[in-house]
Length: 400
Image (cartoon, rainbow, N blue to C red):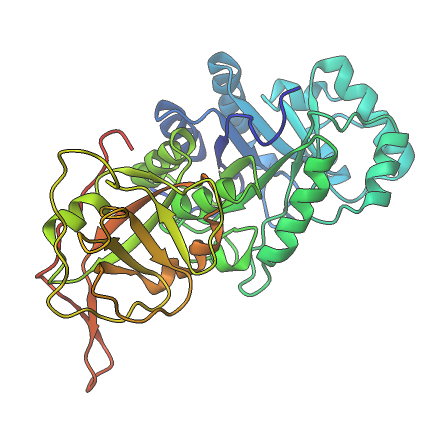
């Protein structure tokens, strides 16, 4: 099996049956839309108490037939409730397989004997068993191995958390990733749609709380770059093509994207170095800045002149070294800590507040893109913010 850290990322979407939906399209159409955009992995559950699964089995069969025809993977929670609703048992998974289910996620409700039965039954019909990543401990993983589950190459899928303020911490997610990757497992997590939310709470379905109101592709990039997850699904059912396209782009180009509010007086040559390209952090870690070569020591590049008036560089400031730093001219750096003004470097802008938390994801050789956005100025009287129109225009990398 490939090492989890180098396995190609997977992204997925979700669909739900028997509950009110916020999408314009049916669950069937949502799966089709996502598949047409390049998503091949889907999640669903049939154990929600409020869901009328019996009344929607025909649609489930239609979705399953499409998924089988298009060779799409469908993960479903395995729980005694699921068998009561769609048929089958721990010894007979054929009814779930006929619905297009390819991966069973072991949820609560099974004793050791039932888990052992499920492992054998899944092997007979060619299904993969997925464990619940969120509560695992070294002891629980040893127990799963004792029951016959091969962890190497298996997937561990985290919970999502519908209730606001109930999501896991980033620190815990990182610790679980270390534990599960240590067993050779692939880790899967969820991000929340910002266009459609699932019934009942309608507050998104993320794995970690701080992603509840983050665009799914941005949250996905953090999970992938930090190696907290190898697979990322949008937990909510969505038919928003932009969300789905951006998720596919994050899968295909899984680098960090930081939004930068650009100064009105940003030096054009410095801005050209900062934006419109993919950066890579140098191979070392540095005490007070994140560093990329930019145009340092590249012949024939535009000269970056020193600023008329240097400015202080609080954490997140993006700056480029000028001709006053002959050996380093053209190098780009981002402040880790608050730094003083310096004539030898010119400030391009600053990472916006919402993205400052992502700076800690930058490690030696981490790839990242800087995306210019309009600086927002706060009205001291009203407290509202307004866009500053006199900023560097946004530049997008082709195909990224």
